[in-house]
Amino acid sequence: MQTISLKKIYSGKVRDLYEIDDKRMLMVASDRLSAFDVILDDPIPRKGEILTQISNFWFKKLAHIMPNHFTGDTVYDVLPEAEAKAIEKRAVVCKRLTPIKIESIVRGYLTGSGLKDYQQTGSVCGIELPKGLVDASKLPEPIFTPSSKEEIGNHDINISYAECEKLIGAELAAQVKQKAIELYTTAAEYALSKGIIICDTKFEFGLDENGTLTLMDEVLTPDSSRFWSIDTYKEGTNPPSFDKQFIRNWLENSGWNKQPPAPRVPQEIIEQTVAKYQEAFDLLTK
Image (cartoon, rainbow, N blue to C red):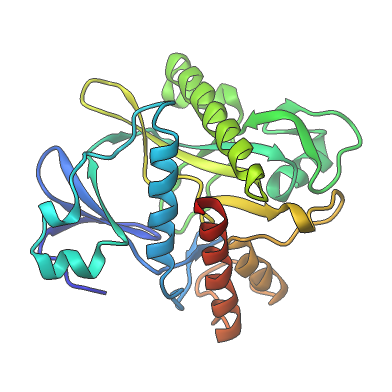
């Protein structure tokens, strides 16, 4: 990837952060793919560009609900022109925020770890659900099921709302829950009109210098959400998805134990994954 002349301050599973000044940073989405909290050796070409464009679309669409990390600056305001041109589709100038130390997950449908929890306990993260639900069942209403934010390489752990309150405080937990559900509900309704079911998603929040809750990082991308097509959705099955679940399914079936290193992903699976990301972008934004 293009060399960036700013000082790198953080390298995450997918995104790299660079220092601009004490109030702003540059967030650059790479083509790395993380599955089961392990970064795969094989990048997904153009993934960072597609994810950034999807996120930017949602940040603007949901701006009436709450503030977000946009500063109003472009990459051309903070980088030499050649550098900016090379990464303009995958980079965003962001506010520097204090991250809230939980993953804010909202589920509208039952699948994945939520389904496993429900099958064992009749509830998800301590939230009791009606009897008789199956894979891909629509929930009576969206539920907020936070998880702890673990270091890279460790699996995030689902926690109860009471544990969430202990971690970040009752007042902030209530605000995060309310905003996360409102964001999900608004986005899910819009996506449905475009033929996409948003099964579940993960939001990241931070606090600005005035303590204002702010939406940050990425929003409603195929990396942070499960997108299903209305055309292939069927309750009782695990619907095919537009997102990295496609690669996750391949990894699950490969017999991998979910510990580093991950197996090499075949080229055809990589190409099909890129096509799914692109299709999701096209459906949502056109």
